[in-house]
Image 1 (cartoon, one colour):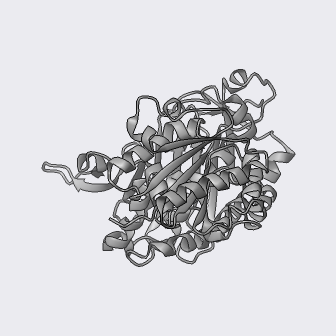
Image 2 (cartoon, one colour):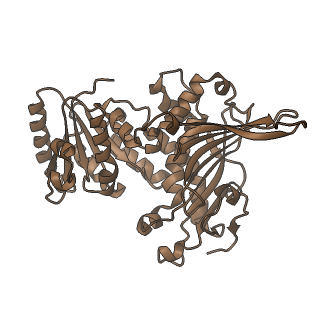
Length: 448
C-alpha cells in the first residue's frame, strides 16, 4: 500500500448532508483499512459552535481525529485565523503536511470561499489541494466563469473536481476490462459494436428536493456530469496497463469528439416529466425535465457512425446505472450484447446464443454473468477512493477543468433550444421503462 504523506483534511460544511452521509463514514472505513496517513487530522468548519462529539456522536474513532473550527466562511478576515490554526497543527506534526480543503457547500457559496483561500495566502501554501463537488456551473458561460475564478488562485494540479461515478469500482474496472482482455480490447470499436446505451435510472422521484430540482433538472444533474463521464470512459482509447495518469487526457479527447447526432435538437433529444412532478413542486407551470434521452455521435474514426444514447430519469421502473454495448450481427450469426452494471449490482454480463438441447437445431439466448458480490465481501465506497486518491495526488479519477468545459459544449445546443420553447416536453407515468420511453411507447404526448 502506498505511503500517504501527513494530511489535514479541512471540511467546509461539515454539518451538511454530504459530510454526514458520505465523507465521515468514508474516513472511518479508510482508517479501519489502515490507509490513512500516519499523521492525520480532520478540521471541521462550521458557522455555529459545534463539538466533535456533536458531529460524530457515538463514534470514538472519528471524534478522536476531529477538531472543530468555528468561522464565517463569507468573512475574508476569518481566513487569517484559520491559517494560524492550521499552522499550529502542522507544527505539532513536526513535518511537512498536505492540506486538503474539501468544499462541501452549494456552488453559489463555494466560489467566494475559493477566492478567500486565494487572497488570504492559504492557496499558496505548499501541498495545498482543493476538492470541489459538482455542479460545475449551470451552462457553458457559468462554467467558464468558475474555471477562471479557480485558476486565478489555484494551479490545475491543485484542484480535484469530484464526480463520484468515476470512483465507482465498476467504472474503474471498465478500463481494466478493456486493457486486460484481448477479446474486448480488439472488438471495442465501430467494426464490431453497433450502438451504445448508457442508462442511469431511479425508481424514486425527487423525494422532497423540490427547490434543488426546480433549479437543476436531469440534464444538469446527471447528464452533464455522470453520463458524459461514463461515455468518455467507454469511448476513450484505453491507455497502456497501469498508466492511470493518462486517463484524464484520454477522457478529454473522447469528450472533445462527441456531439449531438445530426438534425434538429428535437430529433436527437427527448425530455419528459413524470406526471405528479408539478404537484410535488407546487408549480403547475414547471417545465423542468425529470427524464432525458439524447443521442450523440463521435468524430473519432474508431467510433464513427455508432449512435451513443444517454438516458436518465426519475420515477422509472427500477434503479440502475449500466453501460450496454450491442454487437453487430454477422451473416447469419446473432448479435451479442455486453452489459456493464455500474450499480447497484456491480458486474458484467454478456448474452450468448447457444443450441437448445434436443433433436432440433434451435437457438436460445443465455447470459454469462460476473458479479463482484459473488467474489468480494465488500467494495470500497466511491468517496473512500476519492479521499485516498486526493491524498495520494492521483488525478486519474477526477474531472479536469477542460473536461467540464467540453461537456457543457456538447449540451449547449440542447440548452439553447430548451430556452426557446418547452413544447417538446412529454409526460410519463411512474414506473416507465426508460429504453421504451426513447421509442415513445410509455410516454404520453400531453403537454404541460
